[in-house]
Amino acid sequence: MEDKTKVIQALASELIQKLGFKATVEVMHDENVYTIRMTTDDDASMLIGKHARMLADLQRVLGAMLFKKLGEAVDVLVDVNDYRDSQKERLIGIADNIAQRVLEEDRPARLSSFSSYERKIIHEHISQNYQSLQSHSEGEGRFRQLVIEKVRP
Image (cartoon, rainbow, N blue to C red; front, side):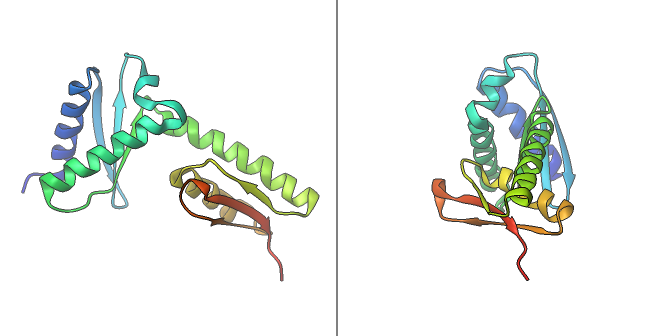
């Protein structure tokens, strides 16, 4: 079997080209996830999309293509022009602001409109940086909310 990294890079490059974009594609493997970093001089916002929906769609399509090609599920994370890094910084800022508000007001905060990836980043940040707080998700589908609250004894 071909090296997965090379297969992923070839499929991602082919997909981007068929979508009419020119991009450099780099694939890295870390903790069972293949990160596909695309760098383009084209309008990156077209590849990222509103609320990063296009990025999520690219990820789903690549996942399906890889499953068909390799016969197994492959976890991929697509990033365009380091969007994920700036997204993570923004989410950490939101998490810090909400955490301070929960601590000051002593009442839970409910956040909606976050993807599972975004909720994961916020959950991790809260658990690593605020021992007196906890976070969890409630609800289903697009009604899923992230709840941040004080740890009760």
